[in-house]
Image 1 (cartoon, one colour):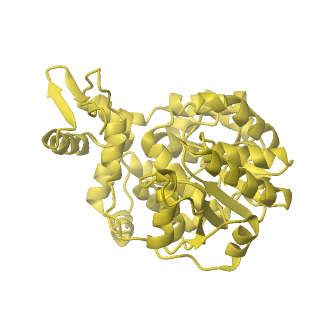
Image 2 (cartoon, one colour; image 1 turned 30 degrees about the vertical axis):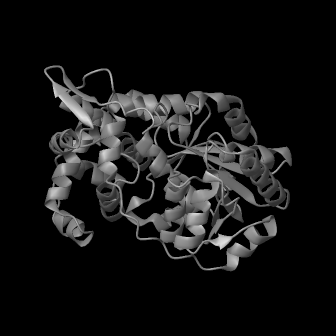
Length: 397
């Protein structure tokens, strides 16, 4: 922390975003957004108990009585902190903090931290997995406006799905509901456009930095949302959208909405991940039925059957969800998030070293080696003298 406060360029960049405040806490939180992946529970525990600045000191070699005790209370301990330090150290560079702040200033993004008037307390329900900061382009006040509906669905949507998404989002937005989604192709895009089309409010959560419009085909849409609504991200400016960050982003979409509605989704759609977060948080969950012969609606039918989601066919039925309890979550086998992050960091062509994979994934080198061993046994990765690479999936798989 002393290194950050002693760097005049870093402090100056922070003051441009928060000119009227003591920048120490904001700088510490920005540093955490750089070194830790979204939803890092060890980071969240330390910050929650010690504050962002003191937690940063503990993270990079300091000690404090009771640190391991508070981590033990959260279900971890000294080993968890040791592993976390290995994840964080490769990213501990004041220049990355400075670059994130500069890029945010260049694109007109605001830095939102807990305690700010527009900080969305709904996200605090995520506990130790809550975000440390949020980067916002546009109308930050929409994050606390009410009511808010999270509308999500498949990227590879059908005409039916996009029609329903537009009908629901347009009706809801026209009557004052903030439409929350992920800015992706398909259902997300249809929902955002419909909200903008009736001069309504919409919020798009991105998996990468708010200075990087993704997907590329939605650059114009994301610019419009930034101008008329709000574009929000948890990773700092400059951060690339990765598979893990998309999954982590989904928890924010679920937490911000007063209810989550899945409009169209395949059997293994990422939208089911958002639905799972909504159910775990106690948020009402709805699903739009489709033709029983449509693979594009199989995930929605699964939610209706396994998650006790409410059947939604109109905007009025979405509004009725506000006063309802959440459905129960299914007992599907969880996927190891570290595995997703590591595979996402690998290429099918170029060989990559363990140290570079640790830096890209945010995992400790020992954890990377352990996972690589398992993935090699499962035929997912291959090693040679040049390093590790991912084995391409067979066509049709």
